[in-house]
Length: 530
Image 1 (cartoon, one colour):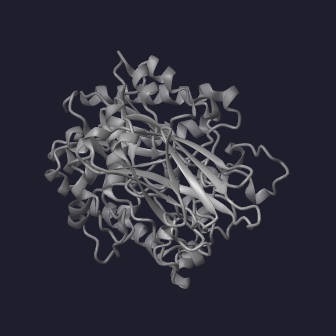
Image 2: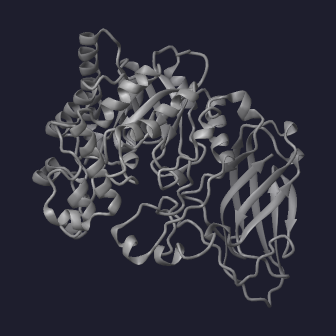
Image 3: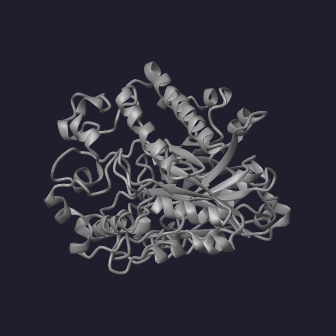
C-alpha cells in the first residue's frame, strides 16, 4: 500500500456480523458477501480489521479460549437475547463447515489484495459476577470465572461485593500469557497483523504507577511472537495499538516507549465512549512517530452514542426499540478531515460491515470510498461537535452566567458559504437574553431565536457519565425524535470564524429582578459549515 496516500482500515467487532441472521438463513456465501466481497468496489479500504469476539470468549475456532456460549450452562441460553443465540449458531455453523469466520475473511481479503488485522479487546469483562447477570454468564470466559484472584483489586472496599471490578489485572503473568496465546492462535489463521484494543476497557492494572511495565512487557512479547511467526512464513507481521489519547500515566500505557523500542507499527489515539472527545488530538502522536516505522491512524465510529442502544434481554419482552440520534456523514467527514490534516495517514472506520445501523444493513458502505480522500473532504459540509464530557451540559444562572468553549475547525471559512451553531436549550422568555460571542463578535439571542416553549425540556447526555442519557430507556425510546426536542440553530457569519481554534462564549442575562429564574442548560453543541 502507498505510504503517501491515506487509506481506510475497516474495523468489525467480531460479533455484530453474526447477530441478525438466523442460522437457518446464514451461509458461508452470505457471510462473505456482506462482510468482504463488497470491498472489491472500495480500493481505498486497504485493511480489514476483524474482531476475535466480545472479550474473553470468542467467535472463531479457538482452542486456547472458548467459543461464545460453547461451555455455558443450560440456563444461559434462556437468559440470552435472540441475537446472542444467532451468534452462537452461526459461528458454530462456520466452524462445522471447515473454516471459521476469521479464516474465511482472511482468505477472501487476500484474494482481493487487502490485509487483515486480528483485533483483540484487551479487557472486555462483564460484571457484576452474579448468575442473574446474563452478560457475566454468557460473555465471560473460564479464566476470569475460575481465578478471581487475577482481577483488578477493588480500590473502594466500602462498595459491596457485586460492584467489585471483574476486569483482569495484567500484572499477573497468567493473564498476559492467555492474551498472547490468543493472538498467536489468530496469527496462525494467516492474518497480516494483530491489533491490541486498549480502549476496551480500562483499567488494566490495580496500580498503574507501580506495574506499568507489565503492559510494556506484554507488548514486547507480542512483538517477539509476531517476529517469530512471521519468519516461519516469510512475511512481516504488523502490531497495532488503539488507546485513549490521554491514558499514558493514568492507565500505565506508555505508548511513547513502545514507539522508541520499535515495537509497534500503528498507533490509534482514540476514546472509550464517542462523546468523551470529538476532536481527538493526534499531534503528539504524529510527532513521536516522526523518523520511526510507526504511523498514526484516526478512529471514527459512524454513530453518535448519546444513548445506550446495546439491547438487553428485557427489550424483547417490553417492546423497546432502541433508537439513536442519526449521525449524518458530515459528522464523520469532520472527524476524518481533522485527523488527516493533523498528520494521520489512515482512517479506522469502526464498526464496519455487519449491521452497524441494525438489521444487518451497513448504510455506511457508500462512504468507505471518501473518508480518506482529503480533497473530497475539503469540499463537503461538515459538523464539528464540541468536546463535552466534563463541560456539557452546562447550567447558566444569573450568578454563574458565562460559558466559555473552544472549537477547532479544519475548514478555511472563506471557502465556505454558511455556518450554523446547533445546540440544545429550552426556549427563552421575553425577559431573558443570551449574548453569544464568536471570537469576540457578539450575537444577541432572544425568545425569537430560542423559540421553543419554556415548558419544553431538552433531553441531554448526562454530565460525567460518558455522555450517555440519564433518562430511563423505557421512557427515552418511546419519545419520537428525542434528540430534536429544544434543538436551536443559529446562523453564524462566516467572517466571525477562522481555521483552527475558535472561541465561543455564552453570556446569560435575566433582565428583570421580579421574574423567577427557570433552570437553563445548554448542551450537545456543534458547528455545521456548509
